[in-house]
Image (cartoon, rainbow, N blue to C red; front, side):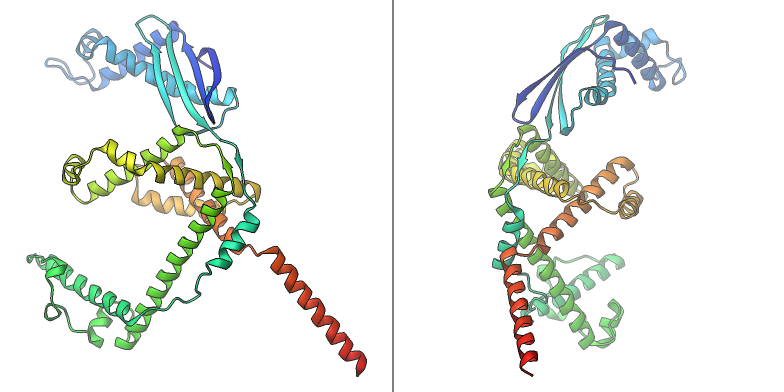
Amino acid sequence: MNLLSKNIIIKESGESEVEITAEIPAEEMTNRYKKALKEAQKDSEVDGFRKGKVPLEMVEKSLGQGVLIQNAAESVIKEDYPRILEEKNITPLGHPQVTITKIAPDNDLGFKIKTAVMPKVELGDYKKIAPRVLGENPVSEKPEVTEEELKETIYNIRASHILEEKRQKGEPVPSPESLTEEDLPPLTDEFVSSLGDFSNIDDFNEKIKEHLSRQKKGKEQERQWARILDAIIEKSSIGLPPILIESELDKMTAQLKDDVKRAGIEFAEYLTKIKKTEEEIRSEWRENAKKRAQTQLVLNAIASKENIKPDPEAVEAQANHLLEHYKEAKPENVKTFVASQMTNEKTLFFLASLKDEPEKDKENQKEKKKDENDSGEELKE
């Protein structure tokens, strides 16, 4: 489709950032204004008129020209921005910062968009770094679970069971800390069988122990991946635009708000309880957001260099599964998210599979020497 914008100027505004300035012709803005007015008419309700049948002049007077022209401006910029990116061969990162610089009825619309673009990443020698970190911090195949850890987990299972039971009966639910051993269901074969596929107490203990061991291994693996990535980041040169850090902070803040909402607390109430503002929280998280952005850029660069891609069918299946639980989400956004997560995971497993080349050479030399010795013994015979 043709661009609506004119007088487009692209310039670098900082490290890995571009600034786009452009204008939308007055004629196009007039058409968009009329369209915005008609859209507003659909939801307008005024005494004496049916919904959607309020005269346009009354709708315009009710909402005001300012609101309508703002809606028109946002609509046209949202539509033309992807076209500008395609026309100018710009690959954006994160959410753009849009500023309207000139807006008035029957006039050209002026706007400015600042966006991060894929920064240059000069990777450290990850094929040497990863094996070194792996050697320094090996992951246990089957981490040991202590008796104390097993007892604590089983205690928590019994406590959760009794609390859930009281909820279902509509009885007062005590705090977990107030429970005593006498309050909990006795640990019997019958009780563990009611919890799942457990034949008796010994079977229950063994399976819980195996589960805890797998959890420990998973956490060890995550810590190892973090150490590998930290070491690669340290030896890499990464251009990191501020807008990308802000994008990560937006994601972290949105996740916090969602968590607070799920807990049944208003976000403003939560901020009052912790005696902090949203800006203070974002400030505390800034370094973490920077690390997250650097990590993703490094993973992207390695995946691109090694041609690591997720299985399209697996992406489709996982995206459909998520959409069953998040029906309001946009399918394309969910697929992008899933593909990114799967690519990250494949890249991490790739890094964890790398072997130190000198060690490989030593192994080859040992094999060669062994073959020579075997041949020598055969000749003697």
